[in-house]
Length: 394
Image (cartoon, rainbow, N blue to C red; front, side):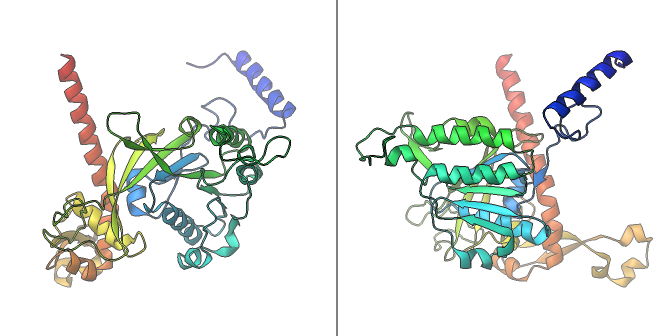
């Protein structure tokens, strides 16, 4: 229903005056939803990591707080470097800043990933958590940085844990409970207030054992603030655990019963969405990822995740090839629309053979099918759960 023109004119003047008085850009996200197309638009930042992009329906959320957490050796820092490297390859203007609280940043490893050192800022010599978060606030407030990451939020001690207000050194016996959560809460409030949505924040978080429940479980640390301000939370958990000859828990794509472990420097990883405040969210759903010989390799993950989703059986892959792949005799039978794509078969002796020999065009085609298949799988699960709930209510 159209708004009264006189009333609308008064509101427009009010908003313009407010923007002028508070030095707010007229193109900012203040105004009628019908007239400002930038309000409430959720944009994704592709990670280049096929499993992470699939389970998040596109990647990290641009300009928002994203959390990746998990135990040791679950690939948190590796994923961060892969994300930055992918953006450096696809966006020539992309600048990232990393707050290296753990002081373990490996220059050689980062550049080997494809990171451009001229477009990465690293803060790696902070003495206190306050220094680290002041650095982060300056980066976020500038709105000159595309991605800001903290690795990890628990690594540094705050001033209150080191010295008293009078400068006297503290002992480990002194009570310093909840200083980091309070500091983190203040930082997130400042980030939210100062950034205009240009800087994507990624917080890497460690886990602790929650012993308060019947069965101990791993939870992220850092206090309640990180749950309030973030829009996306991804949990990583290694699934290497197995006993004796039973390797079913490894779920390595070419491991068979009574066979040895996964390849060297390789492990399987369970990735779960704990929170996702966005359309098409996949809360609570799990996808298996594969860390293969030191990296989240695209080819292996495309094949392995596709196998998990039932798109092939590890021995036969049917895919659509381009017209160069189709015999000329087929092309002569019909119009261009009819022979631009055709279903082809690739046969292998097993997954390992498929991984070594599958054509690149099959990988490209298969990658485009993963998101579609995963979405269908999740939609089906949601429908089943809703149906069961209705049945219980009746």
